[in-house]
Image 1: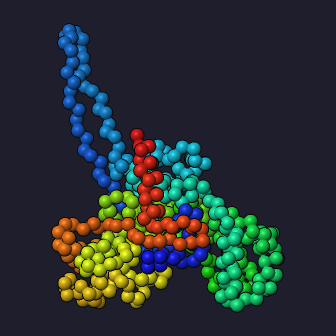
Image 2: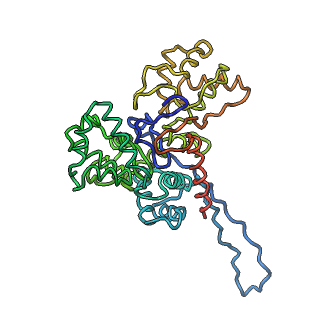
Image 3: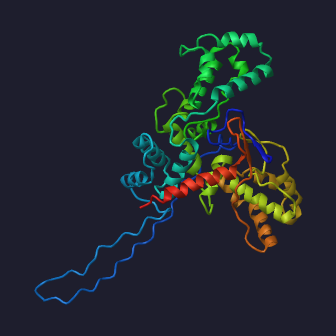
Length: 416
């Protein structure tokens, strides 16, 4: 996952379009509130000269100021203005447009994200890319994917195939056999419910799935279940949970809420929105880490793939594995005036806003700027290959970010 080929956490993790599993989502606390750019100060209109008139006919020379066009990063004030702006930017012709508007606006208002065209369009663009505004998007060949995963686990745990076949022929909690449910799977929400029932109802379910549902992302924004679990611990969820938090991720309202939080509810000094889209796919601040890898390659003269991971992860936890990035960084200890221990402690903060204030970050970029005789970029698209049974083409995180950015730019054209 940290090499050129980026493998997802399980064969069933990827989004219908593409959504990579990111290690930092599960435990990162919600950072400080995002601040929108301040609107430009209003200027008084110059009086317009009028034609000569008789003294008995008073004429006003005042004119009605024409409001300046709203800029992408300019926030509107008040919920009514926010709703109006969102409804202007939402594409026409999508199913249940009013429902989508309500769920998106609830996410923004609850998460305290400013009502700006840029932020609204960012969420709209990710939804369009991941699900084409389908609340529970259909995944082609989902039943076959699940059978392949079950076969792998049967082989891995040595469970007799006849035992599994007999169990799958029996009725499940919804009245259908497990065989029928697998064969008729259409969406990830159906698949999630199937795995939940198999884990709790089948005698070998806990062993076969290690008491862990392998479905990691869900809903129209393909947000991670672990991210949702971490987020509700530090920020109130605005809806009553009907069945479980996991199930909420597969609903439209839950996926939009947690997806918007993952995309926008963290501070980033990126020059363009495309780097947030890359982070959405590869993990928060992956674009910043990729830029640091580019800087390390410039300083050292060594080839280094900018995959956006300075450290290696086991789930959300950094491991002790020494990555190529670390090896190059540690070799610069004398030039940077930092010990290996200091640098390791700093880069373990790569998924947090505070990393930019560490000695390692500031000194690496200062040296890179000097080496290049110009400022090096502080953001770069991570070079990650995306692999999943549902992906049949050669796709990358950069491809994903560029596709979403195209939708984002289209959305901004609807700004009036």
